[in-house]
Image (cartoon, rainbow, N blue to C red):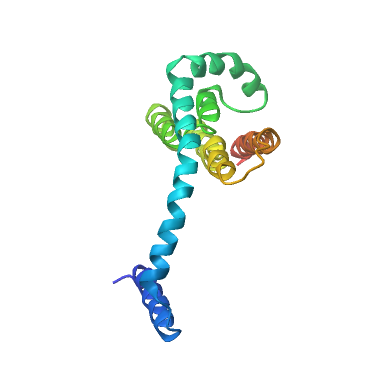
Length: 170
């Protein structure tokens, strides 16, 4: 048996024993936490639904393909292979869509190719910015979205550029 597999159940047992020792009413605490989760989920839902719909519309409308064609020369100039342009554009919107694109790139170019290595770096060094923003900003009252989203998108893009450059020299 793998000792790491027992870590989480052991942690739960230790936490349970500590709560019993401190005479904490576990069930009451659990139900209170669950009650507080319901309003959070309800406040998150519209934002998540909007992000999921927008990412699907981005792909199905053809805007993704059009932007890929338009931005490929600029990406090539910055050292990003044009073959991963679609991945770079989709990753801020959709994690699962990006995973599917990464799989397609592996199938088309091989897992050890330069393009696949750059795709791995682009996938791993960026985040689903709009999804994370929706989750974060759903819980706050003042919604100043533009600056944090632009900073996150810029950081993701610079990480992809630097990652592709490192893939080229290594």
